[in-house]
Length: 190
Image 1 (cartoon, one colour):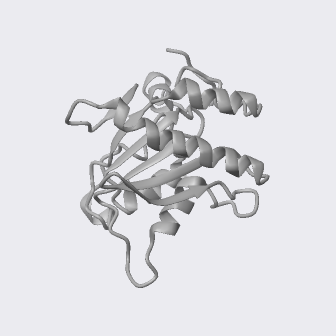
Image 2 (tube, one colour):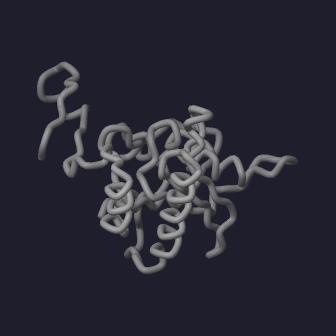
């Protein structure tokens, strides 16, 4: 399990129904001809918004972004600081930036994304950002909980022959910079 900024013990069982729903959304996305990603936004135990991938028609149509978009009321900016975003795969750097900007308090994902992830690869979710550069004032980023029902979610990706997530070890480009003084493009095992 992956954890960041988590102050309390994690009750995994409370997250499973929401992540299972993300898997269902991902399958619906796949059956509609898109990639198998699903996300939802939860507030006070209730699903406030859902999203699935529409990226084959719109490069910004990731499940997380679509869930955020569907949560935005037309008359004002959303209040997402007390919400949790669930997704069947770790948010990419682009999605992670929007999660930070909207001040979402917690992100829970199933399958890590070592090549594109905003937590394991690029640290967008966890970097400390100076307050003038984030309009929601969340300079330390959201709580991050990852790897819950990872095997169940991974089986869906495997069944659909989605290979991007088959790398169990994460790669941290910052380690390569510190070790060699230059950025490496090769994958590094721990």
